[in-house]
Length: 110
Image 1 (tube, rainbow, N blue to C red):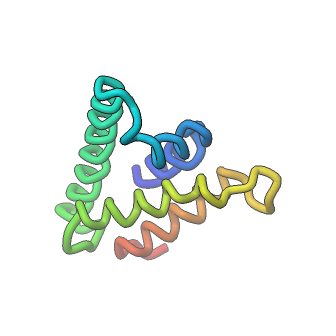
Image 2 (cartoon, helix red, strand yellow):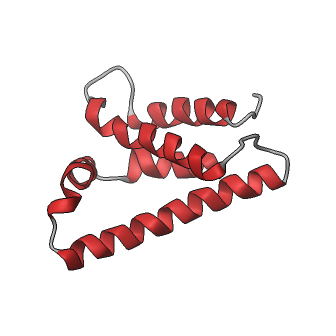
């Protein structure tokens, strides 16, 4: 499930929109900002739920799933600041590398 969430974040997001939302959310009209904030809250709840279930099942080790989410999403969202489609790695490769890194950070061995 983590792999799917990472892949969705890195591969399915539209880069220009993602970068714009990261930097300009506060400048949107209230009704649009509120809609986006609701979607962000739903996305956060999904991630935290997956992380909590993983901890409960003994699959993940983290002291605070919500804090783990903030670290993960910060790294994933920052991809838009450095990713180069003409670079050495495709989005899919970046997603695979990040998935392995995130799973290791959650205590999952390969």
